Image (tube, rainbow, N blue to C red):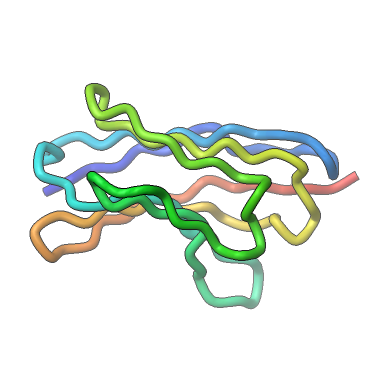
Length: 115
């Protein structure tokens, strides 16, 4: 089992920045991939950014150039630095991890971009 604990959401004005963190615990030693998905009201959950361990991050087209995914392998933590935020970035952001063919999700953290 893998447990994912997220932090860092909140309310920010358009053009502002936030950083999300997700710490993995439990059987986190053989995680294959980690990243972030988001779900806006009335919409399906979508990929934001993902890193396969040993590879480079991939991003949704809508966040390329604005969001940066990074990973601290010692802490089993991933970070999502979100800059130049737009109202359409509003939603619940879920941390994701994949291990041994199983998907794990965090509880979600709300990000609201509004003036």
